[in-house]
Image (cartoon, rainbow, N blue to C red; front, side, top):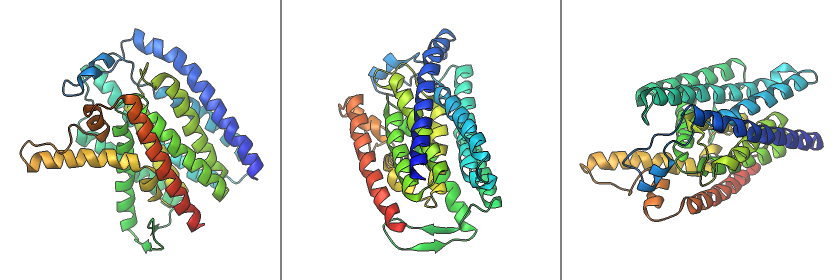
Length: 335
């Protein structure tokens, strides 16, 4: 079983990595020629102005190969396993693609408006709530949801009933936006999410879940392939298209694992990013103009403190590796 999983895992990872690199090699010049580039806020670090015009929507470069390779693998699986065994993976991919589509139209709106803001905040959040609701409804209809919630760092398991879905929707939308906020400097979201993908791959092998390992392989192959063009100095940005897709994928994999809250530990950096943004806004309003951080999300604070983008990526990736190691220990203890 595990030998077959290993072969499938590295086959999927390699295929997605190679296809991502090849697609981006063609996509980046095409985006440049159509002037599909990033607009930069004046309130950001002044050196970010040099990034203006860098192609966005590069997430398409890893979404297409990921979906294609998974579709081929599903066709192979369909001949030897029961269709219902593929449902959780298919719905997780669906959650990721739905969020990717929200990001795509958000990026497209930015291009039409020629500014760095697409959908209004309430519009984007409403669409994300709908995507999360559809995912949970489909998972429940397929009998893939257990409304008992395991609490990390404890033996506590809470039977939440209908409240499970409220918590789940907030978790999904929160983590999706956390991944989105992480995509603020060259290579950060790609690097952190590659590490999180590796955690899910290891957990999938421990639980003998080949469908989950295949999804994790696409995340690793896609983000590492993208990183070839996104590491400092970036030649392309994934845009909301890519970051929202990855957010949907990582949180969906946590649900597949049967331990949704594990993503809070594994995705500790995502939590720090979204928490810093919320705290900054709240503190600003409460103090009538004072700031808790030099700039939010938190990676921009460290930029303002003089850290290079490469240093931030390295430190945040190391923190993610440690939080993922802790997550694996927590998950393994539950098996």
